[in-house]
Image (cartoon, rainbow, N blue to C red; front, side, top):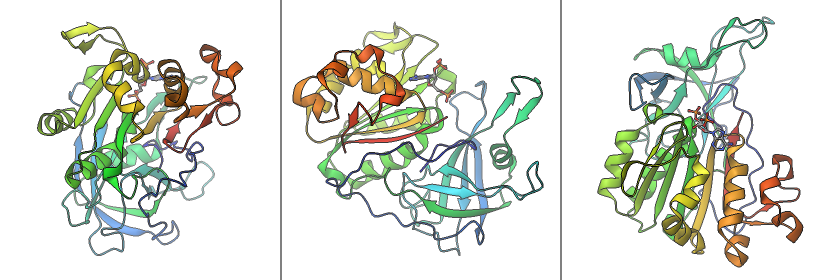
Length: 335
Ligand code: A2P
């Protein structure tokens, strides 16, 4: 799966998960050259506040009558082919969007896939001309009843393990990186597994939180699910009530909520999934390396003593080269 951005790149190297059997994922049922035709069945803003600075939509596709029914799982992406041609007159290329739907889709019968799309609206850094993302704006402009060409699904490594109940889950998301975790969370909670799940969701402002009321409802109904919205440009709600914590990045939860997350991390059951903007993973690894030690830390990442002694100086290009991630970390980041 990839990020929900039209500029989504292929996954940053996901660690091999040979010893954790993952759910089997079907791939490339539809090729971009011969896509399925789906119908938009829902499109709604999914920011908690309709006054959020960005426009992010939850969009559902009815794939009834296609071979996609019941065959795409959370953590996978769906390919969207926007109509029209690019600046060189060539047909637009496929863009990948992470599924937000659980395994049975939105309606349980596998016919409604969903994704989470943020409109890309920007200014060219040099010419200061308005830049609007091709596919994100195409998708967000679609109305219920419109058709859309879909390929895929793709991705088989950023998925849940085949036996959900064997593990606990710590999900780190920023922005639309929450999409796969919405589907995974619903799958875990509906499975009836006693697995603990923590979702740490980062956005600039509280108005930008996605699926926020749904997450609050799920947390109220399921004591094994902890939802930690984490705001980078406002004070966060803390144990003593609103505004008691400073501005936080998702990785800061490892210290702000050290007791709960530390207990989860020290258990051999825990798996860490990370989805969102490139750069967040380094901060998470730095915090993991400083808040855990010895074999607790080695369960997730290893490095020479010299590298471990300098976590503050870690750089992204050291990942996989000097800092080795274990099979218990699943990574999907995008720029
Ligand atoms: P900020 O932009 O305040 O620096 P969105 O995708 O909605 O823009 O949200 C991305 C979130 O991730 C923002 O809260 C952003 O904070 C935050 N962020 C930016 N850089 C990092 C980083 N290196 N590690 C963790 N979070 C980050």
